[in-house]
Image (cartoon, rainbow, N blue to C red; front, side):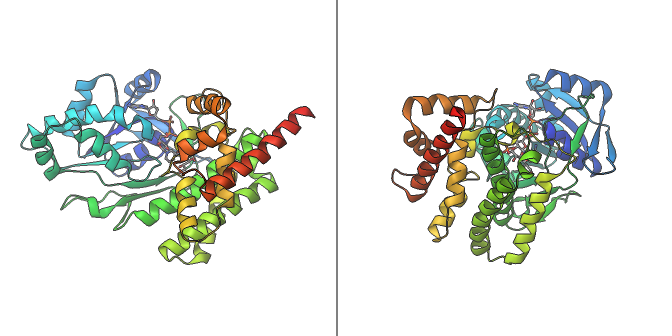
Length: 390
Ligand SMILES: NC(=O)c1ccc[n+]([C@@H]2O[C@H](COP(=O)([O-])OP(=O)(O)OC[C@H]3O[C@@H](n4cnc5c(N)ncnc54)[C@H](O)[C@@H]3O)[C@@H](O)[C@H]2O)c1
Ligand SMILES: O=P(O)(O)OC[C@@H](O)[C@@H](O)[C@H](O)[C@H](O)CO
């Protein structure tokens, strides 16, 4: 079985490549990072180390790599693959689509090409469906009709905290022990086999909402409040009782909404939340606030981890104060080398908070959540100004 995986970064090497290799796939990574590609080509293996007391190591062997700029080689690899996965960042899916379209077109010319599953492992709702849309937009109608028979794009939820790596060996990757990869079984092609290490579910929505609106909501709130407080890592943020409580109270808001929406057991969800808070605090990890808060415009967007759960909570008559505070804090995030943070700051300076937050959250002017967020923004602004004066 062959897999082509786009994105040999932190989660790509530390979770997806590892899982597929352990499940018996020959994994071919595709990346645009020259150093990572050439080291993978030379060594054909790398080490994954667990962030636990014993630092357990696993060697991933028999992998290969292609540079993303080698479009024909990438398309040829896709033409032979059983599985294509991605972990490039939602915004980069549009750059994966041309090679994928070319690979799918090549497969159609071969009568014996195996069925193909394409799974986007990105932090978004409907990532594979987004990739399908971007890919099929590049194929003509008759190709699409043929491709639909033998190609499927099941959506997925992927959970494992993998920080930016600071190891001497650029291929080594340190990951938290916890992992969860959930795939929508209802979208698989008929007769498709199951991959060890993946949890298949008939309905992905509760799983992706639980993951995105708990792990990622909590994470970004820790990052944005932590950034305002001057912390560098999520571990430092979680050691601050006041900020840890801020995260917990936000997860109680999303939790109340999720428990009601999906008829879950509230005690079980509370245990899930507690476990996540422990994961964030893992002393064996150094996870930077700058990574976790990255791309604040994406994180403020209507379907993402702050606005979507806030709207769902509001529609059920539940509180949204904490989520609105997270949105307000996001407006102060100005980590260096983050292009979205830089544009946000420039737009805030030019237009002020109302116009900016309205534009990115998609919340209509005067919406109660928007009013809460703007009120919090003023409080943070005053606190920051006071802090700068003293
Ligand atoms: N790191 C985590 O804890 C984690 C966990 C779950 C999900 N995710 C999601 O996985 C995705 C990747 O995150 P990451 O933390 O691994 O980021 P990363 O920056 O470490 O890895 C992304 C990799 O994709 C490569 N890339 C970018 N554009 C590409 C293209 N057009 N073709 C091929 N390769 C390309 C980059 O060079 C990089 O190596 C994101 O959507 C993220 O939300 C991350
Ligand atoms: O990758 P992002 O930017 O969507 O979110 C940052 C982190 O919250 C995220 O990468 C988590 O570490 C991960 O989703 C844990 O499974």
